[in-house]
Image 1 (cartoon, rainbow, N blue to C red):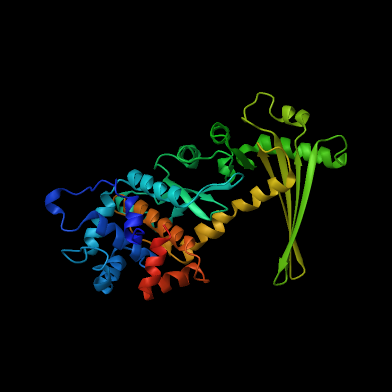
Image 2 (cartoon, rainbow, N blue to C red):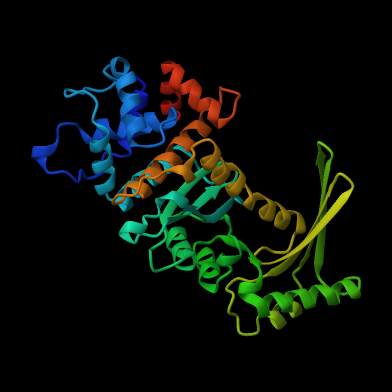
Length: 379
């Protein structure tokens, strides 16, 4: 007999420790978690919305949960998630992701940060929470996330996040802030690769790479080990042209990194983007370092795939889940609600029978209990 969709997902969260004392447990932690996940899938944006979802769906929820004391209040949801250990919650999240997906050889794992803007609490002296997430480009799933410590930044959070993941055969990409020797080393030690953008936070390195490409272009790449790839995309009056050059010449790489600071460095890349809209042309040139062999098409794919975390995760969380408007602030509440949103988004992405966007999938799940079970069953 197949496992019930609700039981299937809660299995991965069974190790989660209940932060409450026994005498205060009117509701099972499992029930609180299931109602919260279902509520967020169906459009709830906070604890009040989750409570209202539960009351509206009480009869249906009683068919899948015991609920001896009815639906928890929004204060109960708030207190439990404020005290729930986010590291444990994260490990359970990763257990579920690993069960439903398999990272393939050559998959791009994009790492980027996002600030939960309304999580700032000036009266308590709390800064807005900044979450760093890892996203699998082929599976289109968030693999893991980590809160940046209050007195730290992404530079320290990214290696810690990468160490949680199985990266063998994957290509790690970051934004410019992630262009750090420790991050490159972490990817190589995990038997993966990296493509890292070089901007003014690595000013000398950027200038050196730019000089190498200027020289190579002047010489028409004569006697320089290199590769080239070009793509042209268009639609709705827009044309985008991307030209990618890579240099893998050992002489160039040795000159660029004589002290082997960048572990596994094999190639450098230059991407020239041209965008034509309404008769206007915009151009941008970006530079990268990489452990890849120097095949321009593979390199270009990794660079372009990185933007998926912005377009398919951060943008969707803001537009469909209204993450930037959330005012949850107490304890670990904001961090744990962020994990709930990413869990809900992953579940909605895994369910592929409904041919509509995330926002409309959430509406469909709210209206159609059979579809909601199907979404939960995608785990």
